[in-house]
Amino acid sequence: MPTNRGILEEQGFNRFNRREDYTEPVVYDIPLSVTNQVIPDGSFDLSKVNLDTFVLLKEETVSTAVDSITIGGIPEKAQLKILVYITGLSGAGEIYMRFNSDTGAAQYDYQQLDWAIGAVGSPSGNTSAGFIKLTGSNSDGAGGYYFTIEIVNISSGKKHISMYGKAVDGTSASLAWSVGTWNNVTDLINSITFYTNTATNFLAGTNIKILGM
Image (tube, rainbow, N blue to C red):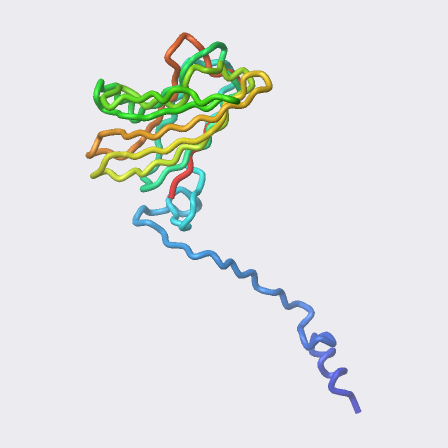
């Protein structure tokens, strides 16, 4: 008389009471809420999905030295985070930022501070500027820059930015902070430009990532 185990094995079950051809389902515990933008068949654009966390929207790496970097086509997101890695500058210079190619003389305001080893740099600010100043000229950044920029990006309000990071001149690191505002209250940010106040270039390998949520 066959045993229960033998009957189960004949029916394709193993000794753990599981069919041999059974595959565990894969469960993704990620809350998703798709925006009202249609995702065409056969494609999936992560920038159109709200994961309640930052996702990569744009990335650019320069292959040769350039005097400015503009990243356009930024999707509409209420919060932006920019990760900036500058391999170095070709000479001493301050790093500036603008949005949507807006060069208006009173469209921005900022407060900026550098802190080198053993000394705090003098803060600089402008309440009626044509740019937001991110770093001072205390260092030529020969060892590179790395900083993070966070932005509140709401069309009906001013765009508030907060930046923190570091610069390395040879082997000496210095801190840099900047806060500022783009005074536009009708448009969302769709492009970002980085440039310097002098005839200096961003060196090859400089990388910028734009994330949004």
